Length: 130
Image 1 (tube, helix red, strand yellow):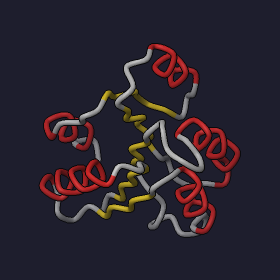
Image 2 (cartoon, rainbow, N blue to C red; image 1 turned 120 degrees about the vertical axis):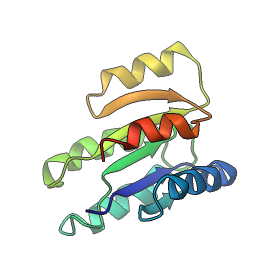
Image 3 (cartoon, one colour; image 1 turned 90 degrees about the vertical axis):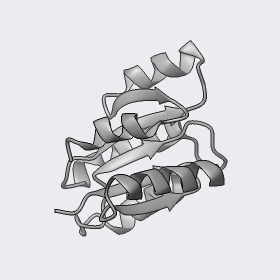
């Protein structure tokens, strides 16, 4: 089975380095990149009946234009019952603000809060489950 990974982040350099690291770990990963939460939510809505297109893992930034990471989570919660597959969400942010960390813990949908930069060994550890 192919693992489908979604990167939701507005930082072009982060998108590129994450993509390169992910492909180095497994060139067969499918990677979808979205610049903000709204693009990602619309993708999920458009693919509710296409489980192979839906992500298995989401790496979600907090601070983005249009729809930030926490707004994405709020919208995802509304859709979750229609998503017919488990999606693992990691909040990945450069923020070390305890408020952000605590806020991420409130949401059951967020498995873990990770401070950027996410290094290749961390990614390998996360992805060995998939």
